[in-house]
Image (cartoon, rainbow, N blue to C red; front, side, top):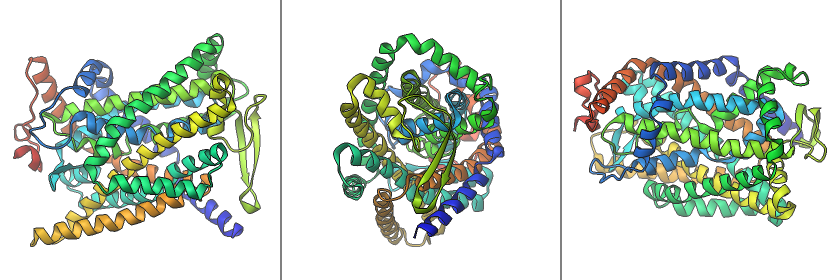
Length: 505
């Protein structure tokens, strides 16, 4: 069994190395810079409007969810284990400078998030009283590339519904076992049952849960980090100096890993904020707004909250408290064990594979070890659980797209019953994978998740670049109405944009 595990782990790592090669990093950075410049840095100029739209009261006559509900659902997918475990992993393998590259990809990525979310609104569809949309929809309707749209939907369905949920369960179980002595498989059952109770209520129940839980947990976590940073205020100047020097190869001890620093910063930045991945676009399409740009602005703002606030909170705590090591290599040996070698070690920092211990030890400088473990265990639970809910929604949206493209249209009632049957079967598969995450190795789980994220990003980013002329046209229309003091309304025919049935009706 151990030989099979090692072979499987090496195989998926090889696939991950291909997906997450240097060209994808360049593509993501180029797309972010392209949309930022092409939209005249909309992510800076419209920050006040982002906040106003986020809390704007909506009578929802257009149907769908409110902007805040779609924002909260997208944020629940963004704020997850990547904000606690992923940040620690980025520091361990890329050094402190990886966090700077996470900030850079967040700033540029907010432009990418704006682009994909606006396009999702333009080409959304109505399904059983709900708006559905995302990359599969705008690839088919905007680019007339149905086969590529189907490919994206298949990858998104497998990635979000099968590959990525185990990561979140694994992190929950890994924190609950040492903290409370609960066996990992028992935690897996608890998470699975709670998830089932929510998703059986459908998409609306998922949105309502995310609307209340996600903002609260993010705010509490940020407040905790601020308290810890205030206590360690004297080391903050040196922390920021280390960040800058490491990010640009100016630290002699870490200059040799500059490429790794950039790679880990971009990879974990994308995994956390999901800009360019296409999942945030699926949530954005569900909102009922007057103009597609409105939801693009709201989702652009969610990237800031995820990376510049929550991820930064974790990173600065770890760096200020020096509860991290920088790893040179991790070698897998028989039995699933690993040998870790270091480029730099801090006295008292956790040894072995990086993860949640980096964060819990930082919190422990304020609360003590036992209380810190409890706090991080509960933070991980809520962060990861809401992310699993978002993953489920994204996978269901992809399944609905695939069903509507292949189902016969001569009997709508029969089609709807068959669609519900497919959704129920998927729920069983999804819940099974959520449970299995409690017994997977964390390395395998993270690698599978990276493959899913990277594959989706390849297709989505290329698609939104090809659709950029239409995006710029829609944004120009919004700006003209906005500057003239009008309430922007979207009329696609006037902009020569077609296949927009929701807006035409």
